[in-house]
Amino acid sequence: MLLVSLKSSLFLICLTRNVFALLPRREHEDLEVLENCFAAFLATNEDAVSYGGQDPPPPYSRPDVVTAAGARPGAEPSAPPLELVDTGAAAGSSQAGNTNFPALLLPPKSEMFQAEESILYISEDEARAAFIQYAASKCCYRTAPAKHMMVQNLTALNTYRYRLHTFTESRSTLPASEPYHGGLVDGPAAAAPPAPWEVAVDPPPPFAACETCLPVPHTYAVQGCPNCSSSGLTPCSSCRGSGKRTCVFCGGSGKHATDSEFFSDCPHCNGSGRMRCFSCWGQGRVPCARCDAKGLLLCHAELTVAWETSTAEYVAEENHGFPTSRFQEVTGKELLSEENHSKHAVELIPLTKIDYDWKGKAYSFYVFGNEKKVYAEDYPEPCCCSLL
Image (tube, rainbow, N blue to C red; front, top):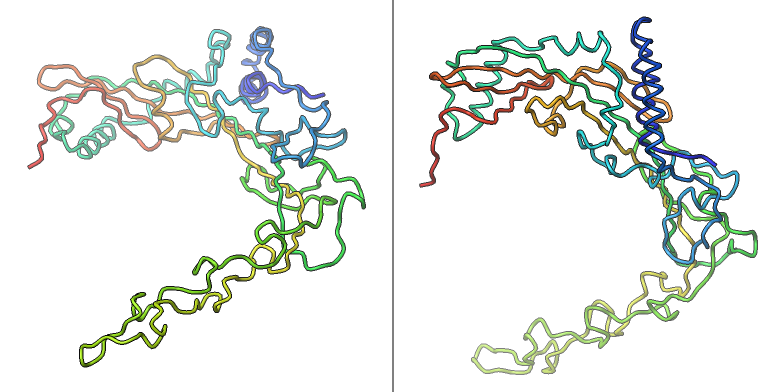
């Protein structure tokens, strides 16, 4: 039985296996501190999920999502089921700062990382240019404060972002059918139908989201078509089974205007106002499309296999007055990246606080990410916009 806990594995992979592997030898002294922190973290996070070891549910009785908990012994999926991924921060979207990492358990930062944090990745001229572009993009902001501000200080507040991409596989079965044209039927009498996780499926390349459908062997059976009650014919939708439609020449009046302004019977419908339906040629019934007019269906269970990538994200919060959710808009400098059964990376995100004066009053704004985006909580002298 395999016990999976996303939070604990995420914490261990991020801080023990990768970060310390890149640090100088003297930095490995922090490893003992980390191990103690990790042991304390596991003691408070016992929400492991059982993977396997249960009897499979009755197959094909109803549409149902079947995960590895329903696998028979020996069945191994190509990726862990989606249900085993902690949905608190990895439900298909990245949400900065919400991965519930135990901030109090993190070891002290290394000198290498502290050096990275103190580097200014933007000059005063670059900060001013980014601020001018930001002000110009706002309809209610004048660009004069951005152009003529007196810059007082640039402070580096660079931070780190950790991302874990987990490749998951899910399987589900639904009833399917096709017209039966005769021939052998691969039913349960030939062999026992396999459980969904016992069906061999070639996995896609890692972290390539895709979906495939295939029939489950030994689940075929011949049944009468419910659409046509096994007759092969269904009522015509154009004439609703009557074989007649409103005459398009007289509009259903049955009369036709002559040159002498007298009305006579419509020659196309003989004055009845109804004419033969051209969809069914007056028969009122058309061949059944579902069974191809055969009256029989070859029914079976169809297996749908979906591979998805779930992402958990953590951004170190330093409480500098900058909303960490804005980091989702930008990229950073990649410090570490590794791909195996999971894919994870550590980025250094440039963040600079610029303090400036405008007409004797102090203001500040932030420039963040490789894209040099701007965040300003308070901009001086916004103009008033009005619609004429």
